[in-house]
Each structure stands twice: as C-alpha cells, then as structure tokens.
Length: 405
Image 1 (cartoon, rainbow, N blue to C red):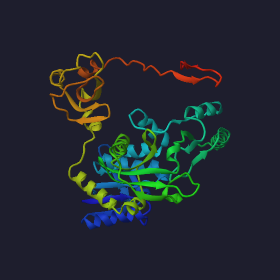
Image 2 (tube, helix red, strand yellow):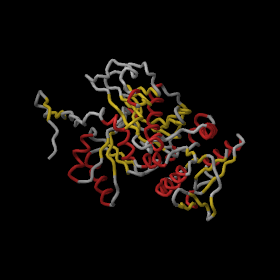
Image 3 (tube, helix red, strand yellow):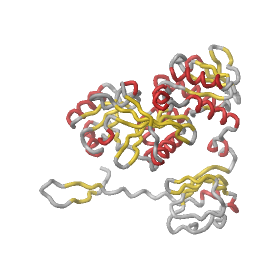
C-alpha cells in the first residue's frame, strides 16, 4: 500500500508517529503538504498536481487538515474522493466537525447527549438564550476555536452578556452553552477508529483552569469506557462521517455529553496516557479498508435512473406493524432494506423474517416511485410546551405554549 499523509507539519509528533507506524508495517508513507496541491478539473478526469507535477498514484489518504486551511484542505480531500482514492476521513466529515454549530446541529437530531446550546445574533436574544441553557455560569465558544482557544466561562449573566456583545462587535460568531457543573475541569477523549473505541483518556485541568485541553496544561490518565460512553463516541463519529476521530465528552449526571468531534485528533497525549500504539491502529485500519473499501451508497446507488435511497418509517397503526419484512411486500416491490434502526440499535442487513415494530426506521434502496407512495405526508412536530416557573410566592406552575411572533 502506498499512503499519503496530508499535513503541513511533517515534524509534529502525530505525523512522525504515523510515518513510523507505516514503515514498521512495510507500507510506503509520504507526507504531502496540503497547501502545495493544485486541483485540476476536466470532463471525466479529476486530477491533482503536487508541486506543479502530476501526482503519482496513491492507495489511501490520511488527512491531517489544520483549522486554518479547512476550505482548501477539504477541497483537496474531495478531489482524492473523486479520483476513487480511499480517504480515512471524508471531506464532508471534516467540514462538519470543524464548525461547532454545524456539528451540534447534526448531532441534535439523533439520540446523542449534548450540552444545551444556543446561537444568537440579536442583542435582545442574549439574556433569554442564557436562561434557556440553564442560566449562569455559562460557556461561551467561538465557532471555529481549537485546543481550548475561544472557550470562556462566564460566572454570571452580566459578564456573559458583555463578553458576547464584545465578541459579536468584532464580527465573531459565538455559541452559548450549558455549563455541566459535575464535569467542571475534566472531560473524556475517546479515540475512535472505524466502529470501535481503541483508546480513551480523561483530561483534568490544572489549578483554576476549567479547560482540560492538553495544550493548556491538562493532565491525562487512561480510562476504560463503559458501554454507554463507548457507543456514544462511535455513533457520534459515524454520524459526523468520520472514520478516525477524537470524541470529547463531558461526564454529565445523565451520561455522556458530546462537546466536539475532532477530525484530526492529536496522538501524543493519548499515546502517552494509554501507552498504546494508536498510530499503528490507524495504519492497520487503513490497510484493511484499502484492501476491502466501503462504498458510498448515497453517491453510487442513486445514479441509477428511477432508483434511490430513502428512509421509511413504521408508524403506530401502520399495516407493517407485526409483519416480517418478507410479509410486508417490500421485496416484491423491488425495495431492499439495507438497515433497520430501532431506537438506538442499528441492525444492518436485517433478515427477511425480522418482525417490524412501531417506530422502526428502514433505510431502503429501490424504485423511487414505489417508495414515494409509501412515505406519508410530513406532519409538523408538535412542540413541547415550555414550563414557566412563577415567582416564589406562587405555589403553582403553568405551561406557556410556544408560538412564533
């Protein structure tokens, strides 16, 4: 296998370890400066040039795209994808993870624990937003900060309001986020490769610092994650479209709270804490994937005329409830069930004899016309009424229906 490592820092610990791990396995690895590429586009011939010369053939690409070059870096990764070169992380996954708002928006539709977060622009919305995430103290984050930079803890509402107004006056986009008090000064970094957590560490802040990042002096210790934390980390990485990721989680009272999914996680901290060969695990995974690559069903299958991929929902009272997939008649309609989602359980390639239950979701590939008739009209979700607490002198609470002005 011939491997390209996209990195602007060939001497940094992570890049050196990846090259070393590849060489130990007899794999030729070359570090390519992401900014030295030129992207050439022509009908049916996507191509790449490196330092003004046509790029030679590579079997796999491991992107290490820095935050400052996200746009160009993801364009280079996307070009490799168009050239059918296996990329450890997709261009879309890197873009999704780099934007804190976008990543939380994507995670929020799934059953993944995340801290309550809000994004506002109007000055009048700041105080109500702070109250919605639980009041002070509150976390204020720049959308594209890294390594703890741009993360501020505001101890009271007045300070929070002043910080947000100041940042917005400098054209900065900021998030307002719930402060998870029980996890103050510590978090979990789970290192995900493929469909498993290969290592995990707890990061603990030093002194009065509430940010636990290693770059800010945080101390680390190896931890063994329970099933809930490990499953959350893997699902978060997969939802973001990342095969190699560092998933940062707070230890909340109600379980893991995902803060961030990092597409270029550093290796030094976690290898030092766990004494594990994480670089080697990445190279082994890539080698296996190059030999037997995954297929992007959305891009490959939907190009067939009249065929596509969609999700069918089994609702309460549906004729499908209590029937097996075989009895449902889907196979006769040339509709193949690729995956069945039941709650937080994912069942790939379900057996035809599996019985369908209310609220099952079926990812299907087949004739679009046949599936279109099976998708019910969208019903606007009823929003839960907000509970408004009356002054202490009152003994009752009442529900205030949410409405648009």
